[in-house]
Length: 411
Image (cartoon, rainbow, N blue to C red):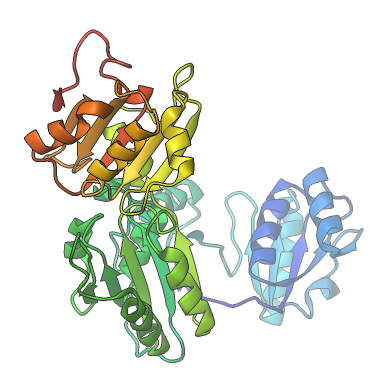
């Protein structure tokens, strides 16, 4: 029978006997664990030699002796000679020192598990009967996939102490399978989730019972929780020891006010990280078959907040036929933007596409031109959430000239 233990090797002596590729592979793992590694081998392979030099490790250039293992917590032997490895395992057995014997068909008093890691969770797989590294690795890889998907219960169960942390997670345009792997894992670890109106809201139904979910979503003309209060919520829950995920649509740093939330956490001494997401400025046009850049058509991208006054830089971008202008949160401000552009001399024939509810079953695209954009948007009753694309890439048939894309309402 085999008992699997979680053993900390940080600062503890590990003796590595052997100088080949197996030893090099295991050395990387021991170094990652913070072990104090000493190597005994007559010669070192190139890979191991580079590691020894890079980390300034102690190397004894000779065959192993029994005294080499006397002060070790763990010994790993992989000399390629089964008799030598068996001798090393015997020395360790007599001294009650754990030993990993990497010889084919043999093992010492300890084994290194095939590991999968997700945050601070480590899952190890070993065989209870004999050595079967391929099977262990296969099981490990399957478990790692579930950990990456966030489908395993990673949330801490014991009482929390000390300061927690905040992770700003960009959820992308909406579908859960367009979230990053890291974002899904952090949601599985979260004690508190503070979310917006847009983004992958469906994943909230996958959270474990007991997770606190706080809706701070804003919509045009409706801001139930001011930004300052959101900042205070994040800090307060983290100070109480919780792992907090701030779940946003798109990317936290693209008109997501993520920078303000990071600054608030840092000012309060709260650990904070940002997980990027697919910004709607790129992913929503993509869902309608519109590339924001396209060789020979558009070489630059200009992203603008449609709620703000039209800046000279935006007018210059609209006037340049090689620039794609993407307007976020711009439905209400479309008349103002169009009027300013036409007054500045931007051609009224400039193509425009308005993509509503991108990456959802209700997605709809209205294609028009700058001089007809306001009237066509009104006739189509365009509403939020929507992304407005202005530029030659918005021209119907750019990528599929032989037919219109499904869901397009070309004006």
